[in-house]
Length: 279
Image (cartoon, rainbow, N blue to C red; front, side):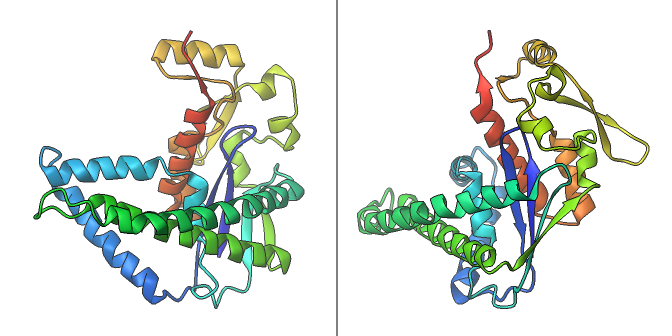
């Protein structure tokens, strides 16, 4: 099992788990069947009621905290019976102590959160079961609430399994120097988080090298803000360090198909949270 730590800004990281050797339980098999049926609705035109519901549902799911998706990706102890060790992969400039602190904080805050909301969602099931819009149309409030019960359940158990791996020291932190190449060769985490220099405060511009990787040219916050104004994009208090194209390249480098969608979702959420109004 591989856990990826991908810095998106100086202070926020995306997280993605690429599980291996898992044994799906009956519950996860049922969830997989439901997910496959839902995915088939993507083929309907957006002008049809099925297409509109699918589009709205996908918008709702994209708003779910990316940390919840990460915890759901971690197999529960039942699913991960064969998982005896996790490789935690991070850029070489990110300190191992920072990685452990981030993951430890995550499990301590998210496990009780998902436990609480799983119970609340369960209490709401009888209420949403009463909603019937039209006899021929499924009860979508009920099914969405059922999805939230499952989602909180998976995230809670994922957090518990991650906590177990951390407490039992069943992990190895791999500081990948190749991964650092997307960040312009920064050598210390302090250059991303603690430095007050205009270079470290600036974001980066992706420039393709002959190797196919991105190299980064530091830019000052004023340069980033000016470009944002010209392009009509939100200004960022904490500029992004990687682009969607960089994330696609990382996914190919690590040969992890789900990596791109998960990290891109996290990146978009982090940028939206860091955005400041246009002046």
